[in-house]
Image (tube, rainbow, N blue to C red):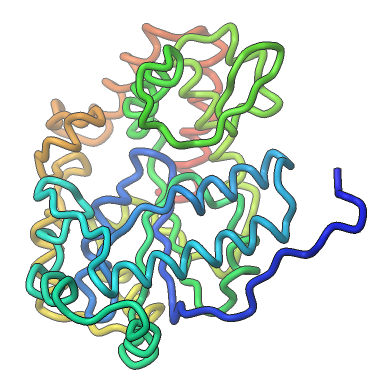
Length: 338
């Protein structure tokens, strides 16, 4: 409910030159594409943006005024580019995807040792860096983000077959269900004395009576239904399956979108990410992928791999939930894979 005579929160000035957002549902391959995008000359190191995600999630729940959400998103984007350009809050943990050891170590050390603070706006104006954010489940809020950033924003949505994302999402549902992971930073809300994730709005009863696999299916249904229906000509949508097997058309699109050349550094990063691949699941065997539910392919073909995943899910869900998953899978295949 709007406050009577409330002030309009605003921020007219902005340091940000440009921002690219790599977005998608958990497990779609964002952390595979993000390092490739980061290898482009003016694109900064990958960063996560929990405050921007939280503003969008609060906005989706009608729990924050639009002017407040937009201003907070704009302010946080400025803070992120400001900090990264002078080496503040740099991630020095080698194993992390957002670590300076995975980007350009000499550059980040130089920034830490150089003058910062008042010099940074001029550095941003001169060098025109592209802020690089990796986010989760923000496609329904793309219009809000374009309202905030305008033509400064390049929004890239990664999609993937539901049977490939459900394993990681089931792990997420287990963590959320027993409140075992205090690191989770998505917005939750209370309803009938229970707590739910932001995307559960309108599906509280289904989540109450479901196990972790079924909850994963309902969350996939909620998000994918928006992707199937809503069209946004400003969003570059990349199917994971096509990117990893035939990446060239998408690398060219990314290059044009960001105004960056496809250099040897980009090609080296593609090779590091095993792009192109013979089989979809044949990615780098990193610890963070294994923690998220990745395992080496067990089948000789993609059809066998999908069938094996469906059999695993079928053992753990009701016929009704399995029918929902089959419907989403069929729609995904007909729209993106045929």
